[in-house]
Length: 479
View 1: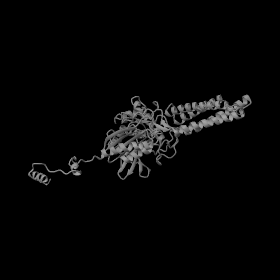
View 2: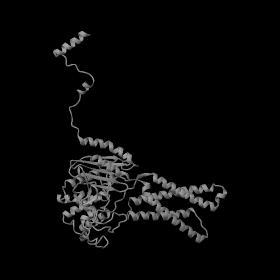
View 3: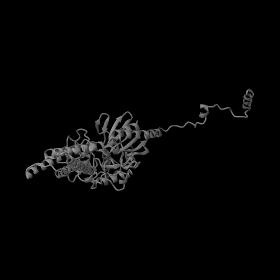
View 4: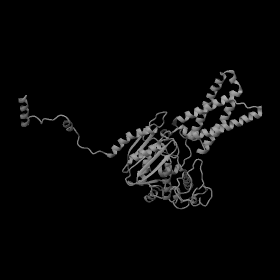
């Protein structure tokens, strides 16, 4: 053995065999690749790819789309989850979502484009551009300017369903977020140009910025890619149930009084219950139409479907209850006992159906093409809004001086936060962040970009719980 070791040592010294290699960690280290610089953007993308699905599951948000901007470039677009929790269709990068109040930022950009073209001015009362008034005549109505509409200092309210056109504070007096102000802006732009909002947006915003998946209505070309919003049905139906219960009770009492007058006695029957429910359901539906706007939209459709299902369920349960009554002993068949028993059965059936509704969540029917609204009707995709954010920081289609005014503080809206002309501005340690969020009941959205670094992110979700999720992801992505 000693002789063999000595021989190997002598041959190694003579160079006839290679150096003896040690085993273990050192031998594995010899196979390592040369040092490679880690790309921080790639690390962030990988982190978000894991972080987002986990947060979506915790927040019970069905679908989400993200567009990530770094140093003025869109580096990542990704869809997570599903567009519809029933069909399971996955969200893609180009999936279209309702962006809710982000509609206002797009409308503001269109208005600034009209200023650049000399169609509108920032500080002249906007009623000068109207051929017919939109607001009730008043001294305040004659003072409102475009700058005030865009900076939410017009004094108009945020009550858009139904529209409240009253002026609640002097124009220019203070910041008061106003959806009605942007409905007024829409009227001003449409009257000044003679064109509808959708055409104005296509010509001044969507076309120039190549936002091919964006619209204030539901055009045929984007409908197949439009996600379904999702809600907890109970949260939407709570007020509806109250209205339905009140109208049903009142209608039933009137019916009983009429029967008392006609027949000389009170008589509760299945026919009377059905008639009372049909009347009450019709009144409840009219209530929803009034508060969410005229025409058939998704909330009216959802209400009608729920009223039909609720009425059908009630009818079935009451029918089963009446059959149960016929099987009870003879003394239970007396009208004095049978009627209260039927009322109790109706109440328990209604309560059970309401509790079932409150426990369920799911998709909302998609709206047909409706009237465009500068306040809330924008449909768009994450990459389209990313293009818009890039235009805000590096304008290519709007005069840079006007863009500087649009993205400069006009009024303080909160601590460390201002409002520009149609866009929010957060003042933080890393500089100003331009932002706008969107909050429909079934869709939540948030877009933000650092004005100096040009790092930003767009988050679109189709779930009722998407607001906190979007904020968490934006904070995570923008450090």
